[in-house]
Structures are given as structure tokens and as C-alpha cells.
Amino acid sequence: MSMHLVTIPPGAKSEPHYHVGYETGIYVLAGKVLTRWGAKLENEVISEAGEFLFIPAGVPHEAINLSTTEAARAVVARNHPAEQDQIQPYVAE
Image (cartoon, rainbow, N blue to C red; front, side, top):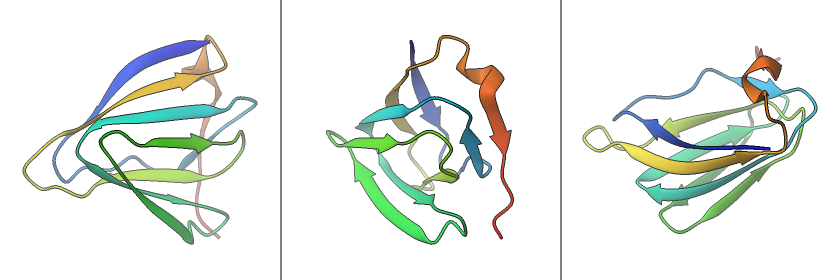
């Protein structure tokens, strides 16, 4: 298992990616984050402070901080100790 604090700078986003063989749980501490997921990143959900988001293994996704002035922060837990070794870039179809 791994667990850490993630900060997404104002207006920033992650590159689309997926995690090989492990799940991710995200608890938003501050900010408003749009998460897009699916084969074409066609699904969307907005998460705010106090909300939890689950990403199953192998599901393509990206996270976007909707604020241009405030950082978004979240606690991220994954069921793999070396999770950074299992991240794969993803290009939507």
C-alpha cells in the first residue's frame, strides 16, 4: 500500500494515464477537481473537499484543477507500494 498527499497547482492537470494492477482511492482536502475517465475520457465527475473518488485498476483517467488561483489537495491511497512504477501514459481513442 502507498499513501501520500497530492497537490495540483492552479489550472494544472495530469496527463491521461492508467495504473497497471492496482486501485486508487482519493480523498479531496481542498479545491475542486474534474476527473475524466473511460476509453475516450468521456465520463466526468467533479470532486470537492470532503469527497471520495475511487479509480479501478486499468481505467484511463486524468485530473484537472478547476481553479486558476488555488491549488487542489488530496490524500491518495493505492494498494501497491511501488505505484509510480506501474503508471502508463494513455492516449484517448
